[in-house]
Length: 309
Image 1: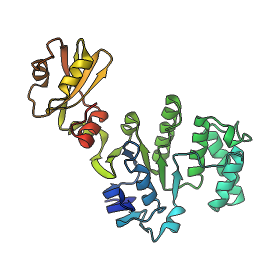
Image 2 (image 1 turned 90 degrees about the horizontal axis):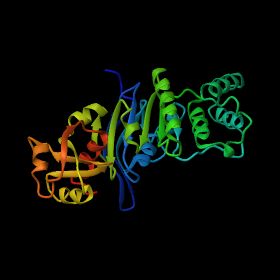
Image 3 (image 1 turned 30 degrees about the vertical axis):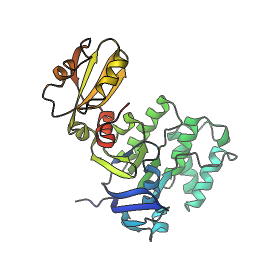
Image 4 (image 1 turned 90 degrees about the vertical axis):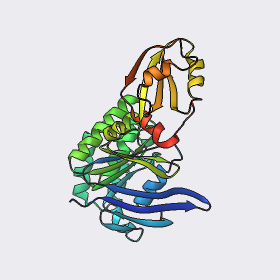
């Protein structure tokens, strides 16, 4: 069996009386994109900082690329790339100047620096922006520059903390294509996100809430084993019907999607469509159909239990 690139057991991080990470167990195999999915405050950034050696755990053990943390944090830095949530390069330096500065930090030789920078400028569509100040670039351009800086030294493992939070959908899609290219070239990637569509792109995924891991598997496997059934119904007065339905203990959530109501029901209901149509106040609903669960449905089941929207 190939050795995991990340192995964590019982990882805890406290800030005073606040527990940001609570008993995290994690195994990440090499050559995959592994995702952290969770809302703001779920512990994604703290977990990444623990796994990169920037924070010491309060309890637990963590090994990354064979390095025991936090003891070997300095050695690990040479083998990983880290793209922070906020753009962290220098706004008053040009694109090329930022990359040259990062190359010096990583100890690249002069010839290797020139060769590698020219390669990355072409790969990430920055070759016409080499003299532009980073602070004057668009969100998508800064994102590509930050990724180029993070992979400049060819890291074996790349950490990306909500890298697409400030860019448009087209740039988000292109960015993920670049991640798959890196993965195909042999890199392992851990990426955090709060976008459900991005989470579905990961090979494996951990759902985090309040510093705890609520689920951990491939996205398709999580949806297949969700533990609930999803029904969509059409009708009038959907806002009123929704309020009635979410008061039922068997209904985990309900959300309006245009002219339809999407309802998440406990799996114990053998015929969820008929059961819903028989509920008081639902007489005007029609066109009921059971549909494929989404990752958002999984998130609701695994994190909030009976979430009321």
